Image (tube, rainbow, N blue to C red; front, side):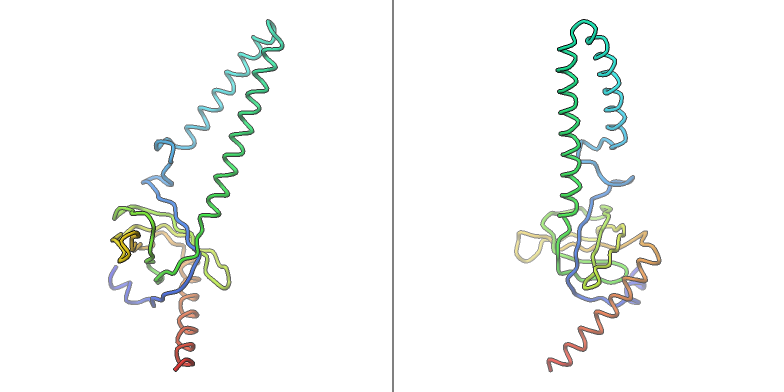
Length: 187
């Protein structure tokens, strides 16, 4: 991999960056590492049981059945709102950061420590075109930053599509050219 690194330009620039920590099978789930598909299957099973119980209760006490049905609807609305809020938080999580980037990896200052070897899903927004690049990566190192409050994290890209890699290379070459022209102009 070190030979590959030498083949690519590396620049420091500002990008939009968000990441998701992955486990070996995809995004790590905050709900105790239970896969989302298992949670949804469990909820579907519970909904069926609630419907059957409501049919039985409705015969004996229509008012109680109506009350339970209303509570169930309210609970479903809350779950939907929480799901929407989670999606909004994911969008907000994209932060503008100064990074050091090449076609094979990225380095940046981060608030949280992430263990070496941990897989990530990175979402980059390249400016000024606002081009989106998504790639998986693996943490190469995560060392304390000089300020003592942050960490300097280096991540190698892997499983990046050829198209995304080509777009990233073109962006880096273009940005590096602009940066060199600006330096010449400032001399």
